[in-house]
Image (cartoon, rainbow over all chains, first blue to last red; front, side, top):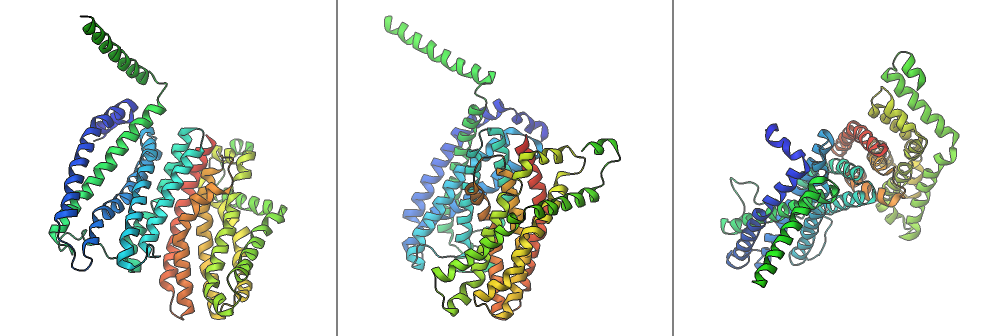
Length: 262
Length: 233
């Protein structure tokens, strides 16, 4: 596995990998999200208790799951970057942070919209909601810390350390339901053997969960590739790539003008 | 540092002890810095009866939470300048060069910092509890929770300070980094006090707080050492 992984310590290889994966992730995201959302919003049966307003689950649950998933992967990247001194992993921390923050924000907003008809309030100080809010603050902290350093290498390392420290919060979010057992409904799909959600509702949800994962992956690939480019802007491989691109553009322009003349 | 390279290497214990004593001596030379967080703690607590209501019932209800929040804010003041002077005068670089692990030296400094600034906060809590009209049987629980909770706050806050010590920024960034991490401590501490108010056993919350303390004791010095190394680079 090390032999397979170790070329990706090189910026150029990771950059190319990101761009190779980007179209796959984007198309998978489009397909799963469109099919999952249409199925969930129009064809899935309505809930016997919550009526049609339960349908926001198809956006609330995926964003909430991946807001935590993104944080965990960010912390893992940070750990890899700190322990094995791999710069690309450190860059990935800042590539993930704003996307994860956006997911957390979406989960909070969709939760508030769902909470209003169900609980009668936009916000309640439930443990899970509070932890999700803390998660948003943690993301904002990582972003703010990264942006306050002039030297981006130091910035990446500092935010990696902060991400690792903050990851203690993620299990607290996960187990808070069992610890406090308050207003928020318990998990309905993780217990696969006997799910407390009907399969007609479950399948579109699973589609959307995977769809949001692909959105996350696509955005992170794009951001990481850009991050690498910005970081390596003065390196030969970037210059070579840019000049290659401009040459190609010029050639095709020349061909076009030649064709015009003919 | 010179005698380090010439004579026999420093033992871990004597390094720990000398850093601890150095911190205590330094703090003794600047008593104003010692008093500031305590006075701040008192003032913040005083604001609440004026701002909300001086009715004894209300005070009794909000008292423990107010004292805890004031303690958190006071510790933010302590944390903000924890490594600043060491960083500016190059002590941290000397620590990096020494043969003793950085996390051990950081641990000594944190322990000293707890004795210097936080123990006083715990000790004056009964006075504040009287001001907030808290029942006497709750006061031991309140003090215990602060006793276990303040070192967690200090250790976690020190990570934030170590990350930002190289920046010329005030406490705003630091509080953005650190305050979210304080929330679980606050939740369990206040739930402990609530249980004590209802005359219920609070061993469960206490064990969670103690486990948080042990985890932060173990990991915070490592994280702080990594952060300081990163800053000094």
